[in-house]
Image (tube, rainbow, N blue to C red; front, side):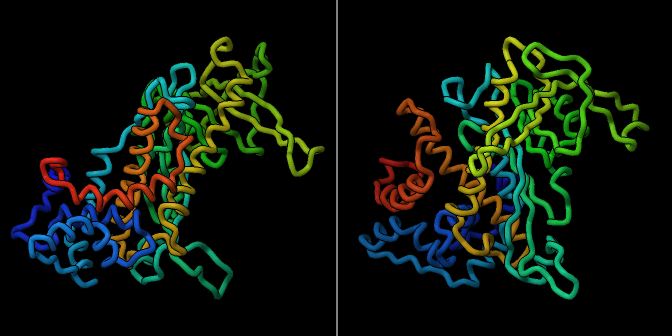
Length: 378
């Protein structure tokens, strides 16, 4: 936290009762106690310390709502962004079950939207979804694109944008955190020549689903039932001398549990051309790890937030600050789950996210009751 404050140059000029370090903790704690008011979140955050101070005759006054709001406004959103990018990174090791495929780290990119409080500032900056003429959507919306490590559910990069900006633009920017040794998966909504070209440029491999309206010619059949083809640049890219890219296409069907007579058809493209190491059946099975990102989004929107309106901030700067605090809160819970699972020799996905969240809520005041020599941080 000290490094993030120093790098963003928001050091305080005088000693405050609500210093920047405490406000950072408060913004992260807003996701741990999402249903509580800001004053109650602050009370929960220093509950154990308050008990220790009472024993020595001291009393810490809980600030009013306006004082907390002013403290948040003094804290630049760049501090939370800097802290997020300093901390987050993929954590899975080769022993983590489901995190690697033949030496390649499985990462997934996806997007979601969050409701914001209905204020004029939020509506002007983030925008609303389209609606019927003469009506308007109930809430402004924020679009969030995330990069997730499939084997641990850790979000190791994220970008937010106004609702009107498409997720494909942000998804391309998120490739800054993708490198060689990774296998990037995406859904059919993110398929494009630009996505394939940008992923290849990073040196990583990819496995993505193709929309039904996109056709590929079978240039060379392969022994496992897949075939080689080419993806061509759109017209606007041809002026930039972009070349076609060779891809491997995998087609398969899955039975529909609701209607046994119906078959769901899937088509995937990939840069993995080694048939012995990556047969088509293996890739078809592993692609469905992409759905782990949906569980991660569920952890964010349902279990960690649990609010009808996911974000509580009325102004755009505090919205950005709160979202980064939210992501850091999820990172803290998932990192603890990874460390606990590693020490027990099991996969992190076997542990309960909501159970871990309850453990953390109970543990914070208990740790604060310890003597300083037992736990130097507190």
